[in-house]
Length: 569
Image 1 (cartoon, one colour):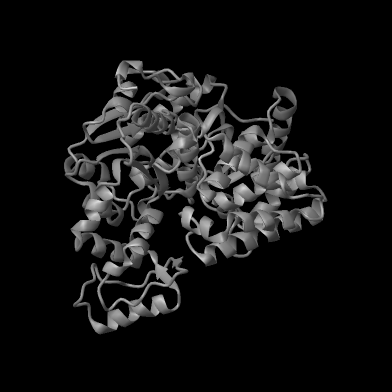
Image 2 (spheres, one colour):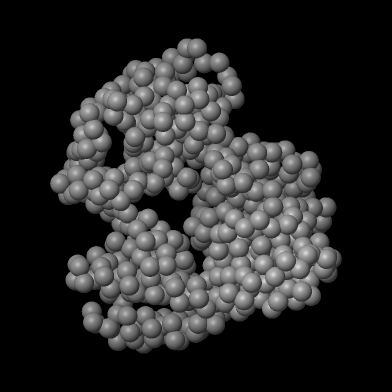
């Protein structure tokens, strides 16, 4: 196909505005998309990829690079693109985190580092280390610093800030490598752009500024809640100037109901320093039905009990599932707080999902992020005959990806199915089947194909943690179906911090322990207001805010919250 008019969005999705169509079909300019909550930014990325591939605007062998800031975001976008475009583009749509992208440059082109840098270990373990490093390295770096850097390499460890230094040196001193990258990717998507740090942006700018590669950055300054982690407050202004970017605004919220959308607008106006003396002109807060608050609880136990009782009633009366509910906290609950909440919820036959439990090397949340562990759990579900259609497709696609099979060809598809069916199974040899599958795929294929694995050590840690976790669950429940359900977090009430909840949506959201001392005490603290903005915009149909009576609501929203109807069970 080569006529723009012949192309239609896949899956029967229609454009909501001419702006969305222009974003997808604009291939001649760098783009900055300001995308508010629920505006469909992931779908825009997927549909643009579909357009570029289907209309041959991204010509073979060029690729699209999609940079995200969380592993689960990179995987979500990759899956959405494969759903829209088919697995035929699996090797031409590269979706990875910015850290994985930087690491791939260093490991691929490590021979271009200064001569004093010792050989990079095959199995690199990335670590977070606040050791002070120079702003740059070169052949004249002092000997003490050289020894300090090489000592990391001898121990098979590299701090992330050192990896970025290596990457900057390679790019700034080797134009040929810049040409290789520019001639590999004709389009670059940057998701959650508001989370970009100065160092990360400098690398993107170094590679793609003033080149034929066209970039599209997507983000929302109102959701810039990673400033504490180094995100650049001026990143949108810098990108607009450096890349001469055309700006698009996507503000329509397709996630939340009209009352929650209007409530989000109130907070959005506060972020813009709009003087809201009479918020009732925007929304009659006392008469809303889907937003409520209660700040009068005598204790956290009473607060948690009211929430559990409400969820139990909603499940019975409105046919909701436990996974339709999200409990958001400003900070991570400690073990005592979580266990207190979990015990209360258990009294109502409700299960809290604790994805922050540490297994051995990783938390459950981190383990779930690895494509490899999800593929193996899909495989167990397949062998136990409790796999869903979507999970089955993901299993086939991931096995094919590791083996470099094009499963659009029937013979390769049949080979994958034959492999999966070749292992006899009963409840006592599931892990042996897992080992057999890994042997067939081969460790090297997984390490080379999976950017988030990348080394022997990470591969071993993932397999070790997964086996330990599912073995313990099976001993406890004696049911592989239950093990799979718990790994996926199915039919469990989700609990997570606001930062972790970014990009997610749930029918009913509870913001618990919403008190001034946790959200700081300034009258208008824009960073904290953005955190609150992210929290409330996760809700689709119900939003409930609670605290105990001995604490005050955050000052920047106290007057607004006090106008909301009381949450009573």
